[in-house]
Length: 313
Image 1 (cartoon, rainbow, N blue to C red):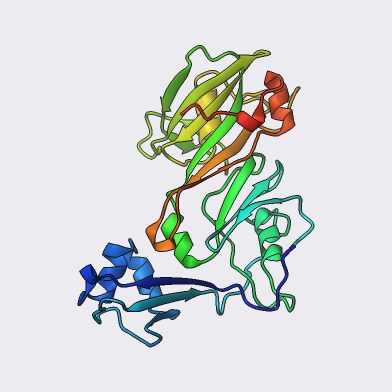
Image 2: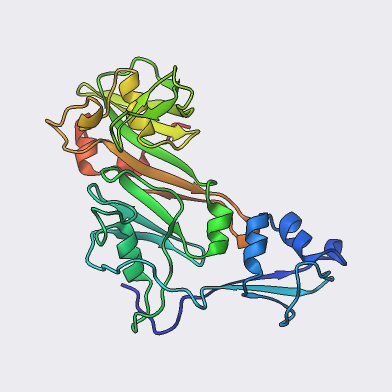
């Protein structure tokens, strides 16, 4: 478990090229580095210097100017730290922290789960020994409580702004029955079931239903089950679970949507691959994170070679 007396500070440095000589600083951020308007506004709060001094967004920059952004100087962990949780650290760098969460754990605290979530582990991992500084938890997406796999959090507001909504994920799922087609797309709108806080359903008639699109590809069929890889065009609550039930193949263990729990007590759904795109402002090249399915999932379709599990895309 990481522990440090110093705040967790991230710095980003840029040198203005000749093509931007005389252009406004705000235009350099927006057009050369891809900053959003919201991110540019946030930079006005501090942590920005040019050649070591203060500058306004409406001031020009010149060839060779050195821009420095600093994040985390006054930040504190925003959740109760809990270092004893069974979360595995997969990867970390200046921008992100990737973790693997087990089934039965929420990503972010809520009324029922306030100190035993991925966020609580994250707060413990990034805190100083005096407990006064740390890193706020900024998950770039969420997984259902009983879905296993990779969770990626941004370590500062810049990486959050640059990566939010841009990560590509591949989910592995074991569906009940033998899906006949080798690949397919489910394009069916979802809406919350009346009277339920969490349950969703497909509804083509209600204009309030939100479009949801799931692409799937069959990886293998065995033991009355089908192992599939899924990619989402949209990120609706319970999307894969509801869509697979809609086509007559609920996920194994997913009793909420018609699956059976005689072989598995939680839905057979695992976030196994995450593609993090190249981002110029973060000096990042594209990278891929992978985690094999839990043993209880592989057992449903026999021993599958998880170390070489293909996405099928």
